[in-house]
Image (cartoon, rainbow, N blue to C red):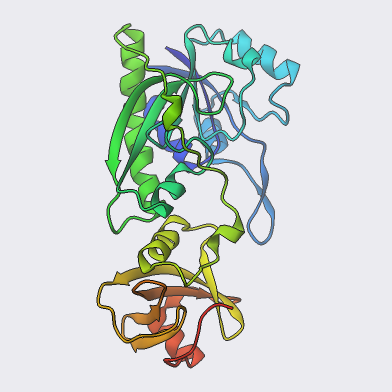
Length: 311
């Protein structure tokens, strides 16, 4: 099949590379315009742009997805299929109608669960033990199209949003090629999403990272895991903000303490009381500093048991 690929990040890149290694023909790529990144705000291209240029594929980076000349250029390719993975723009009906077969999207959840921008993060934050990927036929509504195929992925206790993202990118890429193969052979079925089971995964905000120590240790631990690398779960210590990068729930009740109180200093980290149980903070990133083990934080910042975290 002749495919035009839409995507912008490293998750999308895994899928593009899998397509390029398949028997299908990627005839062009569409990605977001180059934008400033990092502390120096140096203008950088997306991974999809770098890949397309390296493969000498036609590349489009429209400022406006509705630009008439861009739409006309897409039509000239007479594509069979659009594949959209983490592109970052909703495609209007005029564009969705261009490919001969359809526009297809890879979404990192088991739809209709977690429609939206951050399905991987919310699955972990909510304490789910399973997620997956869905390949859908796109329509004018966000993540609401009929389902071609799905694959499940267990969320391991040691997973965070970054490690789970890598697993789902690989799983989605494999399922994508398999689904396109079945589409080409006309050996597929479409399943409508059950509207009664829809849940949302809205964009992450910095405020979501603030730790409420009155919540159970397990909830805070899932917050830490689910918000890596951004916005990160954070609290304050000695008047300064610190991000909690890694943690562990401690089953033993320990001595009674107020939520947010540092109960004990251990070689593995800070044991902190919560609204239900204790949590061990094992890796931290202090404000205006570099990330470090909790042991280094204890030593460098002269932390003592009995101090409180948070306001």
